[in-house]
Length: 553
Image (cartoon, rainbow, N blue to C red):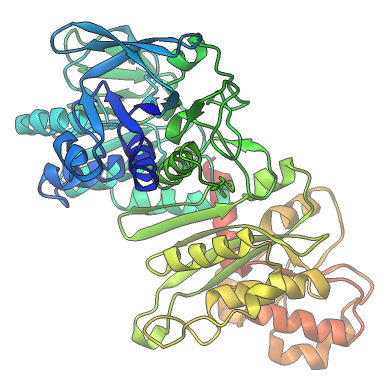
């Protein structure tokens, strides 16, 4: 059997390595049009920023290493230009010599990855100070240009790469402006969470321009000045295009491989396409949601490695299957760590779920040992109690909370299950009631007895004219500083003696600063016979953040 893989980064090399581990009988050949193989795309911003000193650290393996270790022949700077599926034959061009050859195969694997999207008007011509961040050669090119000591950077796009490059260029002393088409950074997340990121970025000196695009470019060989659709003028020394990626499907489409709803290659759970003996893995392939079962496209190195291993196993007689993804992701932006897993609020509602939403604001570990505030937004399905997703922002502990919740969602955990997890505790690492445990407890309570109200829903109800009895249970000092519109001040300590003055039949909303005292007040009023009592999720702090976001959007 002869296995030919097109592409040699995370997914392609994983196919080859797993296939070889399973059998010594197969001939395995890998072609890639680039110069480098098996490199870390995700590490490139950190090399550009200087955190990774040597570029070689991102390219630990080369073709010779793969040949010696796995007896796999890897041909770099070779482009597959045509596939004859009927005769199982490839046309391959040596990009250095220009020579062409024909190559037979028994099994073909597309691991062609994805290419950065070049937004107009940057696609009109080449500029010597415009770069993308997708491969090792991009890193070399940016490194070489950095010798000119640029002072001002323009970044187009505020996804993973855009934000990571922002952080690294600020660290290098550049002034950074981001232009983002959508009205928020990290569009896959909910806007009320990413607003916290936007505030942090602006505090660090980033010029963040949202809901805008570059309309015109001035300069012949270099971008000297850009003018946005909204009339903002920017004069950058260097431009980074980070406006997302598109799967490289052209060759596959030519031979009749079907694409999915996301426009990536459609595959089954064994990474097989619609054509016999043709597979697709990594950023060129579509995945599916663990929660909904529907196709989704989440191009990440971790998923690419997993897909590659599955295909390599299946091709050589194994029984591995792809079980889908949750879209789990994480990034660092200066002092903040930001992660997500599963469905966001907007995604869950689009899918038709009736969700309970919790904003849990707690320290990531004991405050007396330097614990810092961690904000978790978590969703549960009201009908089944199943955890559907979570987003988390903080200076520490985000990764482990998101990973725990991702694991729980994968195994279809309910809110109550999170509370019963036996998680590691010691003051340097967690609180006695870990943020994950509290998330499960509060969501379970909300599903059964203590309903929550988000700031967005509270404002919507007020704007619709609904009569609400809103009780601020904090101190008078805090109330005078800021409070929810229409709230009356009744501290928790006075609520037992004065609740008779309140109307038990009117829908009531309690709140404190972050949620705990509001919950205690909610319980008290329910015990006194109040018919419907909500606790404002995330308290006044979350409410004021939401108001600020509305004012700025």
